[in-house]
Image 1 (cartoon, helix red, strand yellow):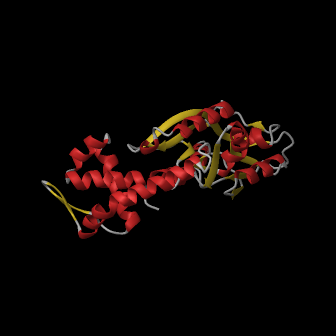
Image 2 (cartoon, rainbow, N blue to C red):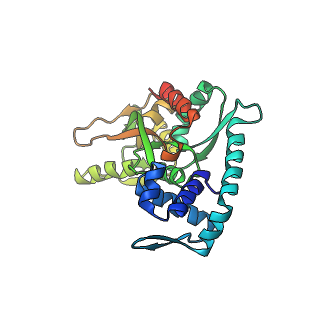
Image 3 (cartoon, helix red, strand yellow):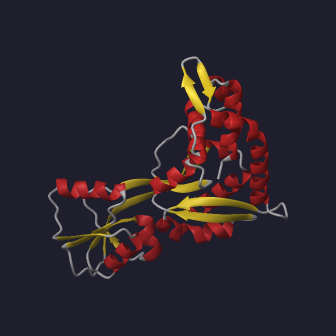
Length: 277
């Protein structure tokens, strides 16, 4: 679905036919405006501008969209307003992107804190959630260690630590369980390799809850975030070693610059802080 903010950015740019002037009028950085236009071009499947040294030229598709764009924009705004406020004018709906493991220890409490806001969810790795926000497919996300981007607003909410865990009654010390999809995992693995610490058996499992279960059953050692451990099996024990430093996670609330003034995002941010801090 076409993002109405992207369409508005296009209309201003199509009128000015100059990226810098349009960006200044819209209050956006030039890279942010370029990103909006590129996203719109991907959505409609057509190139809208031809770039020239002295400015921009509309393509045939761009000319047609300029002709029809304002009506489309008005229609999209009407649909968006309906979805946000609902029939009673009091309901607001947001789509939140989040990693399933983060969702497990935070979402039930977050939802309890919200008043007059409904949430839809998209689950994935933090880097996938960041991409969904940039593409306008979700409104916001709880993201671990997000990369800065000119089109994103990043608010750090909390911290976590990823390290080695075991059970007090662990029966096997030669087995290591980890999630290979997480950057934090590879930081710990590199430290283990550098220090010559080896496990005879290594199990790559893309599910933190299952890794925690293996560790809880005394099957071996696991690389896990502390918040996941405390949510499922608080009796597990950190393996302290001066040789292995925990990976410090930054837990952030992320949304696009275009949604900066959305009141419901502010309410959601307050609820997330209350639950995580």
